[in-house]
Every structure is written in C-alpha cells, then in structure tokens.
Length: 196
Image 1: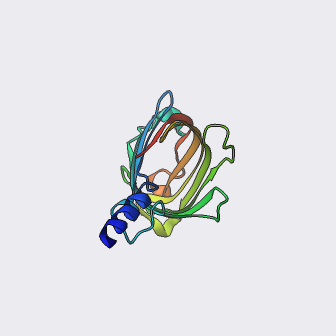
Image 2: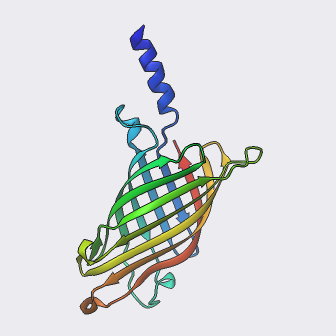
Image 3: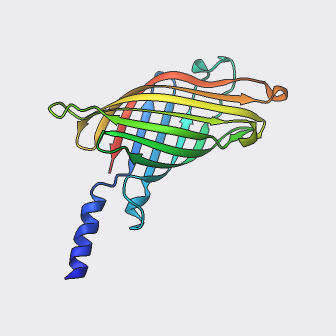
C-alpha cells in the first residue's frame, strides 16, 4: 500500500516537471536549445528547479559588428538552478555556461528570471530574461570577456507549446591581439518553445 501511495505521489510531482526544447529564427540566424529537468531523473531533486541544457547557434555576419567577418557556429552547455518566489508567478535562477566558438571559449555566470503574467482568463503568457557575464578570469583561448543578455515574451497557444518573440545580444570579445571587441549577434528573433 505504501509503495502504491509513493508511486502515485511521484507521478503527481513529475507532472509538474518539464523538459523544454526551443527553436528561434530570424531572416539570417538559427538557434536551437534544449533543457532537461533533473527532477524527472532524480527523486531527491525538486521538479522545475535544476536544469541541464545545451544550445547550438548558427549566426550570420549580417547581425554582427562586422558584416564581412566569417561567423563560426556557437555552442554551449548550461546549468541552471531556479526557484519560484512565493506564489507571485516570478522565478529567479542562477546559472553557469560553458560556451565555444572557434578560438573562443568562456564560462559565464548569470541570472535568469521568468514572470507569468496574471491573466487567468486569457491564454498563458510569460516574460523572461537573462544576463550572463564572463570576465577575463573565466575566458579561455583568445577570449577576453563575454556578455550575453536576452529578453523574450511567450504566448502559450496550445498546451505546452508557445510562440516566442525576443531580442538577444551576444558580445564575444577577444583579446587585443586576436581582434578586440566583437558583437557575435545582436538581433530580434521569433520561434517556438515546447515543454514535455
């Protein structure tokens, strides 16, 4: 009996845990990201609090600081811990990333937030944002520092499926011998987010 109750409780808790997948595009760029909710794999981890993810970004020079530059693909692995603040609909998180593009690598630290707009009679809507920074101490290869910020607005038009629009800025600054400050991508985007 106790085993049956425990299994039912685990199933109920895992119903709130969500992995996510995202695809963002604009006229020249493609970004694909995924996050795994560690609460679905480990019963000692509270669902929707610890995430491990990855991202692949194929950017175009059109949205960089040098339109004639050869832009190599960007990849990252990320880790995020987040918590909801009371029942306010606001979640804050602390994260770390390991990112890489040719001759450039950093390990930025950052903050993330997500706010659920309190409009229960309408469709679910969220505003989210993040800021990540790596000073020289967390920069490797030819990197000098890294700064990324983004903000997005999501509308969940179907259950666990949302349309997103947002703005991102990735500054992959190199040391002076390797080319100096460089905006890897600064652009608006639109896409889909899926939870499962």
